[in-house]
Image (cartoon, rainbow, N blue to C red; front, side, top):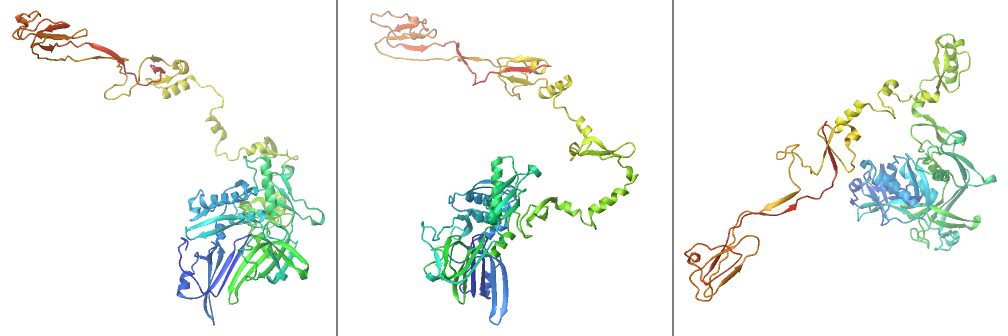
Length: 627
């Protein structure tokens, strides 16, 4: 199914045809007995695959028949590449790259990542880039994607396909380049079909130059002498077959140089030329020495030798049919392009130069035949053609007859020929005359929806002087009173805009709120820290020793008192300095006898220095509007 989930296997078909083509989507047909299982499997839009090649077909038609032999279901459809025939190229694309990259870009744009995600084809992805080198510049618009890709295949011999990967559950867009296996080369093994090699059975040969065209005059943009013309091809004499290609649909976009636009026209010309038809159809012995898909495959060039016809040709394998029926398996390759195949290409031609009503042309244009009898588009739109509905006779005859029935004096509508390319008006006498307004100037009125003067009055001139009141009104909107103006330039806003401004210096800005009212000031550049009042205590008890202590600094001393007397050489402190007495006098350095204890005095708080509290800043000039 379309989710790449295996639904079943058909192992007993009555017949099976698998037809591949190098220049268009291939086809298939399978006929099976009508059973409940086959009815379940044969569903529109189910996919059929037959081997490990990745090729698959999409069931598009079902047919049930009943005969004396029984009931049969015939499923038919096209191969996987036909999936891209459901997409068109929505926009105008101008591309210059290798043919392979252009093909991948078209698929990416239309199927993988389109602007409208509904256009995406599920499970489809780009396969590996092969790096094929042919380069082309082309422009394409509103054309069928499948046909556009095959047009590139026919012109530049780069094939493409969509293959099925059941393991990864993906569809892969791949490109491939055919191989020259003819006897005219020596790089790879040669493939020659000949009665002498007994690898040919029934044969049919055809050659025709009926549709041959080998020189194109391509007409691009422009009119008359200004039209851009490019010649493609250089045949001469009896062999020269000329054709004109109307390529007005190829636009000269702004991003294109002149040479790039010429390259676009050249590509258009090559795509439109038709080669000589040389066609050879034969059944190949599949059990012989030359095996399909191994020794040769679709798109390859091989050699065919027909001794009794005294003929040897090197020709491309353009189609291969694999047929399985009651006679067994047969392989029928088609070498070259048949007249029928050429006609099919004309009918699906995306260049706008085919001979069938099914060709792809610019939308909403009248279709006409050109000087070669080929279909093309004119300048008349479909809407303009619709205006002819109801016309019962020659328009010119009717118009000529109307000339004499104008209301008024028909013979005196004008007294002389009108001035060319001027707008006509009626004069004071009701007669027609030419005005001073040219037809070009009159065309400028196209699209006007109301009185021009009223619109002009409402517009300002491109260069004009503003009134002082306008400037003041503008200033009040941008910088109302109280607004702050910041700049790294010292010019006052009073000079720039007018008004009264007060410069603000050495201030940070803080947003107003419950804590800070709008317009209030405060804060300082530095901060002085003062410590709270506090005590430092230290004590010591000893035996028969003295205690000596030094306190450094501008303030703070240690008070001592003596516990007992000292019998040694140190002077005995008076009783007032002992335990039972009061504290002694303060001193930066003091000593005492045994059993002395010390205590720190209470210090008075004082400033201990200041520090900056500025955050990282940008210094600017600041003004506040005062009036």
